[in-house]
Every structure is written in structure tokens, then in C-alpha cells.
Amino acid sequence: MSKYEGLVAFQRAMDLMVAVYQETDSFPRSERYGITSQIRRASLSVVSQIAEGQGRLTPGEWRQLLSQARGSLFEVEAQAIADTGRTHARTAMGAGAG
Image 1 (tube, rainbow, N blue to C red):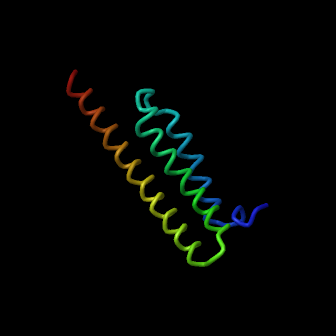
Image 2: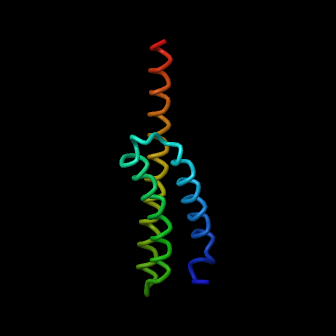
Image 3: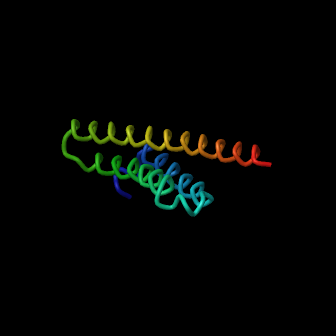
């Protein structure tokens, strides 16, 4: 096992990434290259930056990559909120059309 695989942050980031991939499987096919791709890449970025940071040589580099991972985590959150808003808007438009 690599050093980073034992980190709680890495394990939770992996859990998040798996959940994102599972959830986005149900997204509309028309969003494959839109929000689906973006949120998946952001969740993978969290995992990757934690692993990369663990492999860096100085504490400063490690902190920088953890900071970037945190930024990607906020990106995942914002995209989930945006998708929720998009879904609610689409539902409301459909309900108003009937």
C-alpha cells in the first residue's frame, strides 16, 4: 500500500469519487460532455492531488496540493448544487407545461 492510500483524506476522496460516478450515471446523455464530465473530473482531481501531494518532497508542496484538493472539493460541491438547481428548473418547467 502506498503512503497516501492509508490517509483518511484519500480514502474519503475515493468514496466521494465513486459516489459521484455512480450518481452521474443517471444524468441525461446530453450532459455527458457537460456537467457529467466536469464533476467527474473534479472528483478525480481531489483524489489525484492528495496522492500527488503525499509524493512531494517538502511540507510546503504537500500543503499546496492539499489546498488544491480542497478547491476541487468545493468545485464538486458547487457543481452538485448547480445540477440540483438545473434538475429543479427542468421539473418545474415540465410541471408548468401540463
